[in-house]
Length: 108
Length: 120
Image (cartoon, rainbow over all chains, first blue to last red; front, side, top):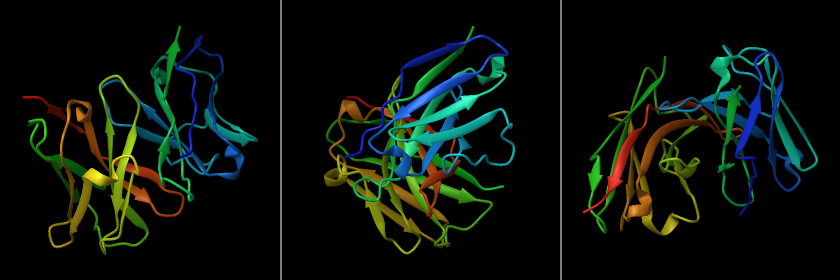
């Protein structure tokens, strides 16, 4: 089955840029989606189809994908961005829905 | 605004069946543009997709759980359900109901989640 690898944690100072990676074999060939999950809450979709933002998600959130790595970038990080971030792909070959292990973003 | 609400026992005994019902309000289950799924999250761990079902009953299951999972849909009640048999302590998790967009399989709506503990 397809495997997605995320770093367990990323730290960033307020106002700086955070980059959260999601590694997978030829991930650039797949649709990658990202979710934000604050403590005790359900996940919220923040990026879909690699780069698209749902309505209501700030422009500070952006996504990209190349080769074997997809990246969620959060610009001008705020304290409220502190959360777990999960990547997910649709793998038509094996499991339709595959999640990465999640990355905890800490705002210093 | 679409809403999903999970319901079911919060405590299940080992070897018994874990059952979850998802009620959908503010929209209809009956659209081929979406499937309806269950995702779980063990305490302190990541998300795991369990399975999805379309309103006509077509299902997709996580291969690692396929032998123990069944899902069903009741369009008259706007509900879908999950059964996970032979429950074990490792099935203890927050269980979420969700709507998945069929093209790309991303999740655009989530329920609030319900904790199910498997313990004697």
